[in-house]
Amino acid sequence: MNHPIAVASILASIGMDYHSIVAGLLHDVVEDTDTTVEEIKREFGPQIASLVDGLTKIDKYKFLQKNMQRLKTIGKCFLLCQRM
Image (cartoon, rainbow, N blue to C red):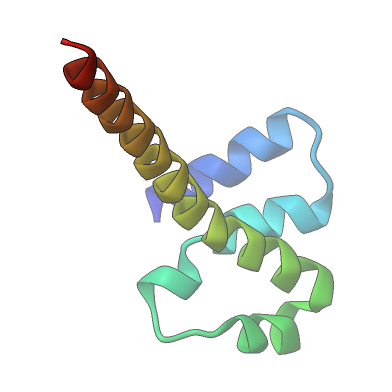
């Protein structure tokens, strides 16, 4: 409970709107429970569900970005080794 409350508190302190603050409270629910984005949509509306869904996908995007960077680094290493 501490993490989502801290996220919501930060969002409130920087002047975010109601939907963003609620999404901050709910952002880990889809990943950490059996709750679906559809259930969040029914309970909290489409805007909050969309924000939660987007936040859930951010972690996957960061993971892909990090892996792409690693692949680029490995590729550069191979190119350097071929030149030697």
